[in-house]
Length: 165
Image 1 (tube, rainbow, N blue to C red):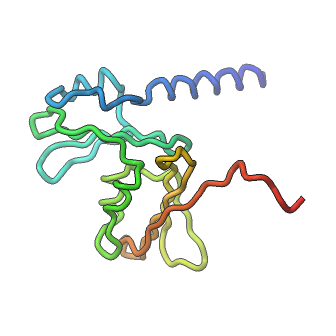
Image 2 (cartoon, rainbow, N blue to C red):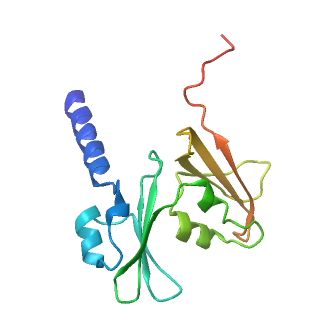
């Protein structure tokens, strides 16, 4: 029974990875929503944009390190495709101005939502890789009104040697 469960879990994980939109930049401007769905499958989430268009979010969170956004105009045509787990994208966050809704629209759902005694609000954690291919976290701290108050990067040291032993 354990082998069957392990085999099923492995199959599901491989299927999820295969559906991930690696190379989504190959989707051309002017392509249709149906073209995007045919190439990448159903998005993790779809959100309305201020101009009446739609954003299809393809997130690999919580374990992956890419989140692809496919922006559509009001007619359902692709206008922009980008991977947002990058320094340049995170640097757009403005503490005191951005809201939780804006963060989720721009980056999708986080890998994890935390709460700690020293902070009075939720903390979003995103996983990503920097330009040197180092595994990273990006933390976004919200106040009780769901406004960003702090945001910063940090290394993910999951494979660091235990020097205390």
